[in-house]
Image 1: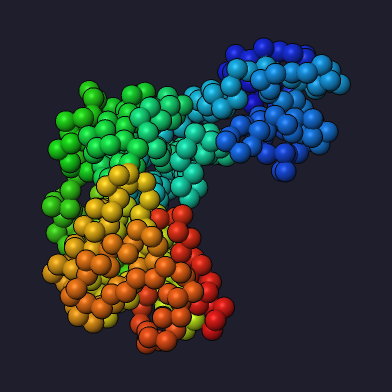
Image 2 (image 1 turned 60 degrees about the vertical axis):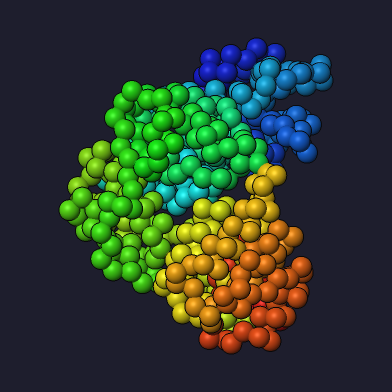
Length: 442
């Protein structure tokens, strides 16, 4: 963007005149800032980027935004722009670039499955369009802006993941992105501790359409979403009930949907259901069935989502990207249906509010009464809340651990090396430590 565009898009006040209308690249990190970049300092609970404005200028930045400007920062041929709030400025600039380059924007949210759905949608659309997507799950305001700026100029379709922790947050992202197509993968209980009810969660998720400029909305078929979404365009609802599953194994799914057959190189009914969002998006953007089939077959989970690794002589499936009651149930369903003698290691689920113990107990009861549970299944738990999961399990071997060292020691001594171990917990539990510890001990 040219400096004149920064001024126009942000509405910032000029404190020191630019030395020519340079073309610059926005940078929010002085550790990687380069000559000719333009520094936009962000603030958070534990950091203040404005403390590093002079460092950015000394490293060759062409200028910087600031919310206050001491005299010593003025002049020296550098451009200083005064803004009320640098995060709001970042959102304005990202919106300007979104409209300047006029991507087709597909926005994805949901209580669970949104990252997988985003990856599936991008994999499909890449068969026809130059597609760029949100990396990993960088789905807050900063991640959204960064994704828009990192998208190459020749991007045709931008697939954006949108996350939230409370009401009003997805509306901010929607205003910045102005999506053409919106997708809600589901409405569950993630963040219910902050929002209080599924009704409020649905309200927060449906904010995704508030600044939508396109006329297509795609969502998991949930009566709560149907009642909540305020959208006048075309609404498409999908469900696993519309699917005929033809073949399933640990790392493969084959299914029929609307008279066409599709394949995935992953197992799990929840992956099939998420794929329906990608199929419908592809259809609406003019892809052929053959192109959609090819895109789905190329899909591969991102790190820590059903990631197969070897550690300590064990084969481990690591799905510890995040966890909530819905994703935990889907995880358990897949394991108990497709694997024999599994060892399931579960950790705490975060942000479930005052009812967090009840949600963990309900998961334990769900496992204990599961139609596919066999006596030779082993369920282990680690964490202060996960103990309530294993307390409810009576129909197979189960055990709780307070410390990771105790859990790893038990696995080393009690679990046969031909066993498959499955890990699932909220990201804050850092379950990769289990893999690292097993590898270290071996």
